[in-house]
Image 1 (spheres, rainbow, N blue to C red):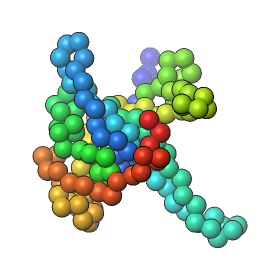
Image 2 (cartoon, one colour):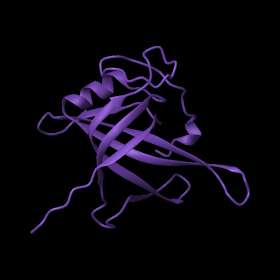
Image 3 (cartoon, helix red, strand yellow):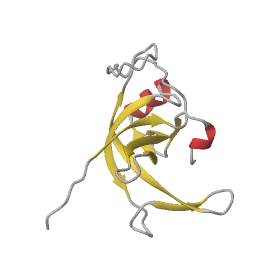
Length: 146
């Protein structure tokens, strides 16, 4: 039987500070939300359209500890990973917000997280090593779905 493989690359900004915990065998896992913004011009109206897709990222092992230590809300990163699907729906995780409105979140298991921007936060797009801290403009609390 042939097996499949998928890889997802996401470039975005952290919508929340990372949260790290240890699972039963002592392995660290860090979770955070990632906002990926898309902007385009509507050909019919000429208006600029903005859309933000949210992803819930989980990072495992030593990289989880590094992400927890050096990442913070607003930081720009590149994530390489794989979508994980809800066992019941086969798609994104479905949940209800505080107002009872149905929501969905895309869950990603990260294989590699690259820290982008500079250590002084000037946003020049250069890559920094995973042992440097930096800040990029922060998202507002209303923009975070988690």
